[in-house]
Image 1 (cartoon, rainbow, N blue to C red):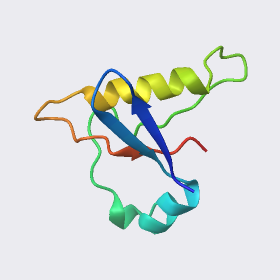
Image 2: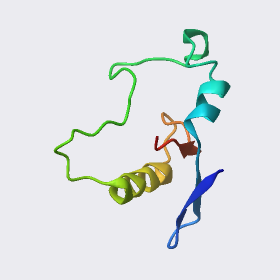
Image 3: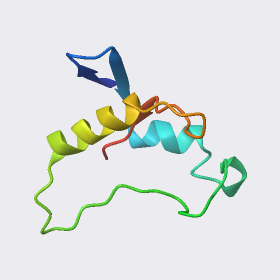
Length: 82
């Protein structure tokens, strides 16, 4: 099942992919499918057990990132919450 993250104020629709879909599309995150790595390296979402951030806050951050447009940034099409 594919979920959508919608923003009522902006024209933004983001797909929430299932982990299996992303794993299949990237050949289980194969090094051959890596697009690149720069000064900050790979970026992953992680929360400590003591974090006060929840799912709604994470979705808000994803919506904010999706609104960013710059020639040095790729467009965010979706995310995986699993």
